Length: 146
Image 1 (cartoon, one colour):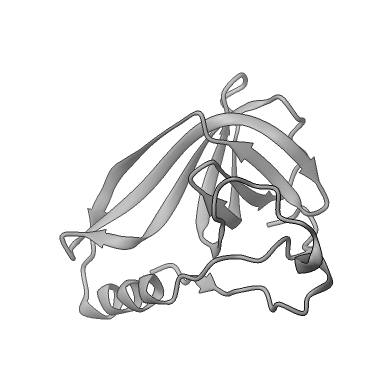
Image 2 (cartoon, rainbow, N blue to C red; image 1 turned 30 degrees about the vertical axis):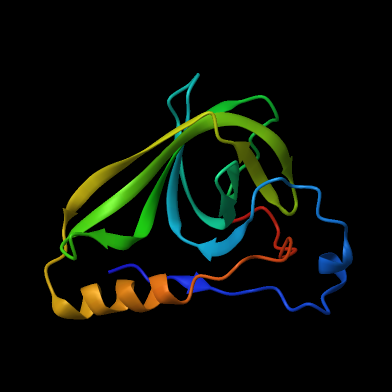
């Protein structure tokens, strides 16, 4: 079963002193993802850094140029009906790409089922993660690697 890391950037972080210009509230979540390049169908594995209703910032082990259309498949930390795994599938263009990650603007999204959870430990772990989701401050400063 995958593990998740959810945290909030401390208010005294130098990056959190920036003026927030985004119109959507962001949540810092580290979730497994698959990134598919729509023009070449290449697939890369990575992790999200933060996400909101307007898009997602993530890390993969390659450079993806601005303007590239991608499809992201993100393992969601909440079970459907307490038994079924979900994936958030998001499509859109890369709007930023650099050392702090790759940012994709959401053009479309949907939730898809991804199979049943077999044991109670996995179910409990996902429930604990979903209770701890908090708003994100700003970028973590990680390099663009998985």
